[in-house]
Length: 254
Image (cartoon, rainbow, N blue to C red):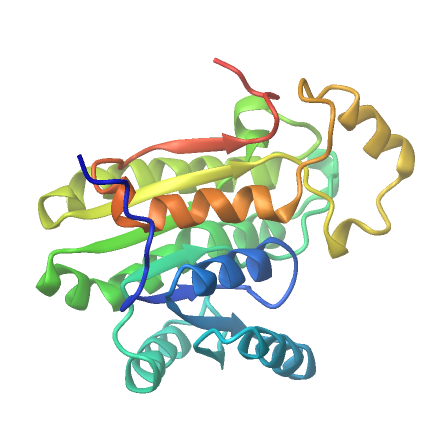
């Protein structure tokens, strides 16, 4: 019996929002598995350049692409640019996100709710529609969404984020069934609270309280999520679709 194949040699992967935090870790892990990686960013070109230099310094292949992933014309242009630079996209990781403040519902407005929907439903829709022709033609593809344990836990006060992530989960499950005949898998990864750069100013008491609830007794690190991404992107996961894998040390068992 052959060993599981985790190689991504010959594949092109796009990771949205990939210049820091979990996105960066996932992009580097895909590159280490042999994929050519398209880094996506929108705001900080200096950081994007620095991350790309670090990535290439490890001997990995890839490039960076500036685009708003909630703008249809920008998404289409980015996908075309990736194809001409690295090759048609075989793997997409939907990771781009706006700020995620916790607020009582009275303090949200609809514009904020809409921003959550745009990033977690509209963006995956736009990118998927742009990459599908190639994936369907070759009858192989990987679509991987970053979801959240917050949906399963019903975290509050976090209604806008949790609602939009619930929509993303429903969209991913439906797409898994729709695209299965083309051997295109659609899966999700739900990280726990994994402290990265954007959590630097979070209250220490909140961090301590969360860590005390983790059954494994330690914080998750970006590498934990990156490993799950490589698995779902690889041929080893050919028969896995429609799943939401929780990477949180046992916070949501069952």
